Length: 354
Image (cartoon, rainbow, N blue to C red; front, side):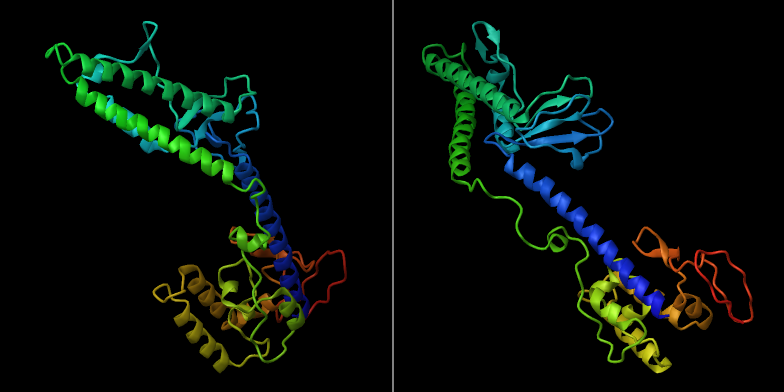
């Protein structure tokens, strides 16, 4: 029993260390993207299936604005401009006069630029594209288009004084487009001012990566008053708090706050208390915690299930919840139960019980 509980404590610590490394890696990735934000760009957002529009997001492959996008990557550049600016321009462009008189430069119609998400790319590109430059290019192109459109419609509105039918509706369209242009210029001025004033050294904070990344944090020591088998390892692992019920911890004794030599009355009292506290309808409760309490009670209240558990059943392979399967104690997953004599081939000696 001592070795089984110590192994559970060690396994839990190993899983916590792996979780901390995963969270720290994710924090470093997000910090790199945050530090790579540029005046007109947020990040490269990668998608799967070579489909920039409908492909599943692949955030683990997102890139800072200043990092070149590799060949064979699909996705798009997320720009800093808010969608509301593009919506205002689109709304002004719905006026009849605006639809009939698109902006031109040298006789050529100016193309529209997506200033919120640009450079939508499938896997068939040569790479080396940088979103910082692409978003700034899109912003400059769209700003130039709206400026030209506004100037043309304001000129038409001024000429409409002597020609009632020739420029009908130009004044209303010009007013709406001027408002959209003013919004673009105001955002750019405020955004660039805030960007220049931002702390260039802002990045990942110094908090514990487990807590910062939302992973399972270390829990306080067990509240059990008696020292059961393996209790020193359990205290070192930091189990016995409510966080055990939602982490990968698999020690049923710790979940129910019981010593190894508990009495039936203690088991039932602990189960009633914790099941009420962790009920999904209670503040701070959850379905996962409630089910963990029920699972631990079912094992410890059934002698036929409790004995194999005490001797290591359930250690070894990790399941979807981070709990461990058989063979952690070198028993090959086969337990010697009362009334049986079982021969096993293992790396160390195994005592058969009768």
